[in-house]
Image (cartoon, rainbow, N blue to C red; front, side, top):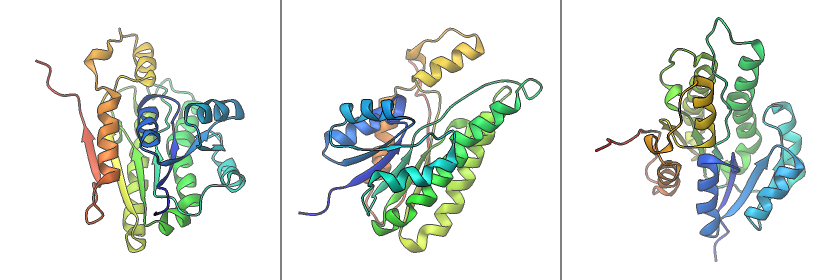
Amino acid sequence: MGAMTTHVITGAGSGIGRIVAERLHARGDQLVVVARDAARATELTEVFPGSIPVVADLARPETIAEAVQDAGVPASVDALIHAAGIVELGAVADLPVTAWTSQLAVNLVAPAELTRVLLPRVRAARGQVLFVNSGAGLTAHPDWAAYAASKHGLKALADALRGEEARHGVRVTTVYPGRTATPMQEKVHAQEGADYDADRWIDPASVATAIITALDLPRDAVISDLSVRPGPRA
């Protein structure tokens, strides 16, 4: 009997991350769930029995290393899945500095630091780092400057990491979902002052399927970059 497959995941509480976590847990994989506080950690370990919580606030990346050290994360990690993210829209003329610093911290600095801290364990498994990016990681539209900057940065992190870690047998994947029917999308519509119709956007389950396909791809190949867009509506 081989060792259990272990995944560390951020953003397992909602949206795309939640569905990915549900599917991996349902097939018997070991989950390590990153939660912003003790209450959230309790909630997630009740939803995913047997999972290991890491209590770390991604808005404060400097706390991540100690949180991981204290959590009892297994010595071998098959996949690190970065699915957490925050969004705050606004024109460059209007965005407060906190909108820049908070989105950069959660969407870019925290994934970089969590990756750094866990890389020895990912290398031990010859595992994979998967970043849930965004269409905004490739193109920045008006009012999306700060969020898109954080996601453009996340693409840079992934691309550099892919080259650096190839010699350790570590695969690096970036998934760029288009607009997906998640709580974050509802918030975006509220910020845009637009009516929200979930049926217009990608089902998060479809993005989860794409992510798990990348994780399960045979080892002779890597899905390096994968854009998932809304399909044609008949």
